[in-house]
Each structure stands twice: as C-alpha cells, then as structure tokens.
Image (cartoon, rainbow, N blue to C red; front, side, top):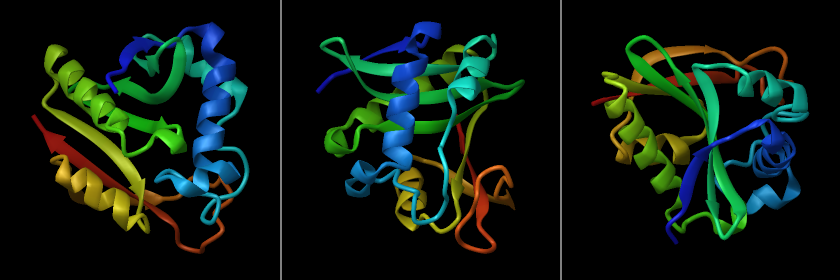
Length: 168
C-alpha cells in the first residue's frame, strides 16, 4: 500500500483530532503500537493544539493518504540542525502494512532536502517495542531523557521521555 503525503491545512483539524486521539488513547488503538491509555490519561491532543501547529511555518503535520482517506500522520518541527518528529500515527487496523515506514522514509527525505544533520524523536521510556523499532530504523538513544509533561496525566509514577536521534 503506497500512500501519498501532503502537508495538513486548517481544514484537516478534525480529521487529525480523530486520528491522533483514536490511535493513542482510543479503545480501538489497543490493537496497535501507539496505544497509551494504560500509561497516560486524557486526550492526546486538542483541536486548539492542532490549530496552533498548523499556523506555524517551521512546525506542521504531514498526512498519509490513499484513496482520499487519511491513514496516518506525523508532526514535524524543523530546527536549526535537525528535524524533530512526534505524533506519528497510523490507524491501528492498518498498522504493519508499511505506512509508518513510508512516513519515516519521507522524514528522512525531507531532512536531507533541508540539509539537516539529524532527526530527533522522544518516546515513553517504557515502550520497549517502539524503542526497538526505532533502533532498527537507525535511531539511537542519546542518554537524554525528560520528565513526562505535567499537562498529560501520567498513570505510572516516574514516566519519562527518552530521546533518540538518527544521524544522516
């Protein structure tokens, strides 16, 4: 399944809201890799947070679509020497069909096109399967971590975000 990628626009706020919250926190997400409800409560992202991102020049969402349907997304932030990505999501019923891999390939292509030296991400430190997946894609833990953001209600004490980078 080959998806097309495009930059999200303000008309995509509702579809991004539904996609991200259903992939990360919805019951349907239990079959996928991105499910976090056992670790974190509340919404993953609000309409307002999505809208704030969509008006920025150096921060945006890419949408993965096929047959006029949105199947995945990723948030990109272009920093001075690297690209940061987060909120990567693929509809749980479509995971393991290489959509996420295609999104990661596009991030690599974009970083090279923009002359960036590295790509950076953070992952919840207890998500061993995600850490291993990103390791297979060339990302290495930097040894840096940060406290889980207090605006998201962590259900596990001591939850941290582990930083990983890939050098291009």
